[in-house]
Image 1 (spheres, helix red, strand yellow):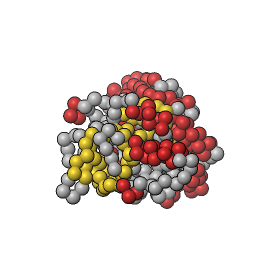
Image 2 (cartoon, one colour):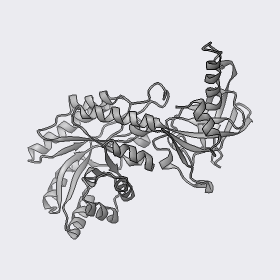
Image 3 (tube, helix red, strand yellow):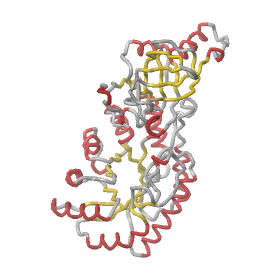
Image 4 (cartoon, rainbow, N blue to C red):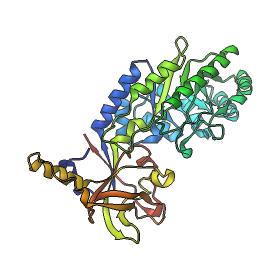
Amino acid sequence: MFSTVVLKKFEKIKTPFYYYDLSLLKKTLHVLTSSAGKFGFIVHYALKANANKKILHEIKNAGIGADCVSGNEIKEALASGFKPGSVAFAGVGKTDEEIIYALNKNIFCFNCESQQEIEVINALAGKTGRTARVALRINPDINPNTHHYITTGLEENKFGINKGDLENVLKLLQKSKNIKLTGIHYHIGSQITDLSSFKSLCIKSNEIQHWLNKRNVFIEHINVGGGLGVDYHHPEKNMIPDFESYFKMFHDFLELQKNQKLHFELGRSVAAQCGALVSRALFIKKGVQTNFLILDAGMTELIRPALYQAYHKIENISAEVLRKSESKTNKGKTLKSGDENQIKYDVVGPICESSDCFGKGIMLPETKRGDLIAIRTAGAYGEVMSSTYNLRKKVKAYFGK
C-alpha cells in the first residue's frame, strides 16, 4: 500500500487524513462479484461501513446494491447512482419521515424488526397509497463468537423478531393490507471469522422457512445479512477476504426454493483493507513503565480501539518505507531488519480521554517527532464514525489509484 512515491506525497499533506487505495478496492469488488456471481447471489453494500462518495462510486459501478440503516443513507445511495430497486432499508428505529421517504422512492424492501414497526409501515403506506415490500428480520439466537458490542443475533440483542413471536406476526400481516411480505432477513453480527457461525445460520434459516411453509407462507428472497470478518493483524498478507468460501458455505447448507433469491449485506469485508488512517508523531514521552507515542490523530478519527478495544496494525511508514528503499539501493542485499532498534510504545492520541489509545505495547522502529504513522485496515467504521469532539475538524480523505 505504501511506497517511497506515496510517502513523498504524504509528507506534503496535513495530517491526520484517511488514505484509500482504490486499486485494492476494485480488486476486492472484482473478487466479491465474481464469487457471488458463481452462485447467482445478490449483494448489497452496507453504507454504514463507509459512505465516502468516491468509495460509493466504485461500489455502485461494480453493480452492487445498497443496504441502508437511515433515511440519509438511502438519500446518499440514490445520489450516488444506486437504483431504488437495489436498496434494502434495515434498522431497529426507522422514523416516520424515513419510512415515507423510502416508500415514495419505491425501494426494494424494508427489513422489519418488530410488530409495532409493521403496524406503523402499514399505516404510512396506506396514507401514501403504496404497498410496502417487507422482510421479517428474525432473531435466530446464534452466537457468532465476536465482540459482544457487535453481536446482533442473540435473543438478548435489541435487533430482530424472536421466533416465539412469529405466530402473532403472521396474524398481524394478514390484517396489514398495505404490506407485502417478500422475504426473511437475518444479521447475526460483525467481524465473524469462524465460518461455522454461518453454517449454523443456514440450518436455523432452513428450519424457519419450513415452519413458514407449513403455514402456507412462501417468500421470494432470503437476506442473510453480512458479518464476514477481515484480517486486522496481517493486512498485507490477506488483503482480500475469502469470499469464495463464504458464499460456498451458504450454497452448500442453505436450502433455496425454486426461483428464490439469496441476498447479502456486506460492508467491512468490502472496504476495510483499502483504507488507512495516516497520522504524524507529535511527541515521544517516556513514562515510568512505558513509552508513549503521541499522534495527531485520536479517537475522534478512529474510535474502534476506544469503543471495542479493537486491534489495528500500526506502522511507522517513515521508517519502514525508508528501510525498503535502502534495501533496493543496496542492490538486493539483505539488510538488518532493525529489530534491535525496535521500541515498545503505547500509541495514543491527543484527545482528553484516557481511552484515546490505539494500542498498548506496540513494537515499532525507534520513532521520531514528525514520523508518519499508518493505522491499517481502517476503511470500514473509521471515517464514517469520526466526530468533532474537542472541536476537532473532520479530516480529509485522499486516494491512490
